[in-house]
Length: 170
Length: 101
Image (tube, rainbow over all chains, first blue to last red):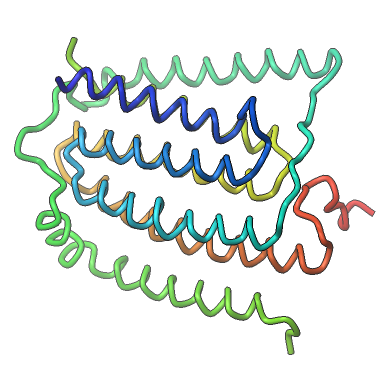
């Protein structure tokens, strides 16, 4: 059951992620935003499979809710036309493609080799669930200072956004 | 077959690669921004997976902070894009060459 759900959610996440960046049918930014919502929702499904229940809820509320509404609002506000794709041409592009692919696979190889000696188990720890209770206990004890700093950061971002969207800066 | 840490990491790597591809290939500022969000989400997935297969919940707390910072970053970034659009009437990266001249 767990395996089947993992493969379903992983496939959906990657499919919707691909449709965000390279939709063959539509070049419209609104379509990309809608597929990003679906991608985030299926990622929340993966979070539930990893027993991160609180983060799955936050992911849907903050990302699929607040952030995507902001994105759609700006897209509608700017009334963007569909774009032309960038095409890489010539020998240089082929060389760059091969070098990039080689570099990525070298890093991936080194990473998965070092994973076996890292002390991380291949089986999950039982009883280690990311429930609201457990995460809140951590957030308000050992991570209290970062938590407060993040709240100040949100305030700063809010003030900055209001200042940026004023028409005439004094 | 049992689902191990590697399965989740492979999904995370692929999602990150998709985001990076989008940042490089697309020319619309907003879609570049969405690809950045995709990359952040890939990192979040890796962190949650590490936390699940590790011994404590610190990874999930870190993801909580990443989501908060990402929300703030999106707000500021979109305000910048709107301000830019108001001045230049464009959201395509190839029209924004002020520093090149």
